Length: 401
Image (cartoon, rainbow, N blue to C red; front, top):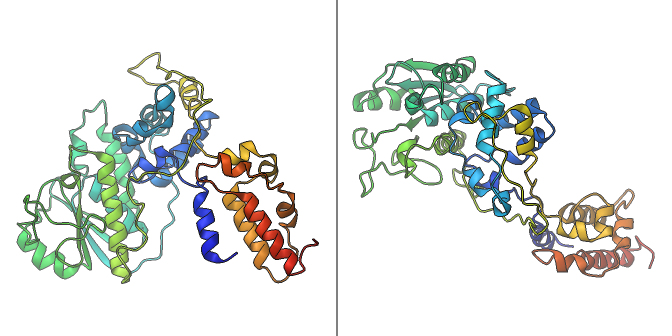
């Protein structure tokens, strides 16, 4: 089986594709695993999963616009899972939670981040973790930007302060009350820093001598977030195309940080970035037998879910997956996997030179009935693969006729 054919067959198996909730999230928080932990009452485990992707969980868990909830497949058989309420419950259960952060070695390169809103905060967080010396400039006396406009009952100032304190722990230098004008930009930032990130809620492009589009907005590349000046990148709420969207701002800061890291390492800014941001997943989930379950409504809407209510709501999650062929075929189910995994095992079995051919039994057990092809959304026939593998093994004397 040549490599190209293997890739074509693997592409037909969609079990590894993310569920709609994960694909729709701008930074792909693993909502499926997050909810799975809550289903069993393991809220600490859920918080750990949440914080692996979310840089400021206490903030985001309270103000996220939750595009994942609108994409939830459960919404096609009743109401979608209340991910917004589950995230809020989880972060409120773990105030001041700090995820384990693995810092890369210091690179000795300086990056300036202008803007203390969610976009700039995320860029500063990610770049400092990547090993850069980050200095964050903001005109206000405190961090948060538009976050500070939320009502205290929605997002307490103490939560903003506690979450953003992580930047000090990461070594980010804060310069608050700093006005970045044209002169400071051209004589200080461009001179003293290897890269600059502009995460601003207003349009500074013309003032800073950056190229503008016909609408009068700073021109930035939609994939790399680079501006017309080399080494200067930008995002923030002004580029979201709609009202303030916290997760879109986080995504902009994160994707720009990836570009800055690549730029400073001298590698491609555009390679392998197709699925950054929201995208359409290929995962198929059969809803024919899904039970119609109404959303769990908290007894006290002002306080939100209790522990028991959160568990019951999490248990409405379908834990989306395909596995159509595995559920229909005793042979495929027996080996505790799914076609993409089996294809790799079979290919390894075919190309190995020494050692035991551990997949021979798997290859020989298929009855070649083609049921898998009938039920697979993409028509993948494991029988054809097994037959081809058997013939190859027999020709080479690795399997008896």
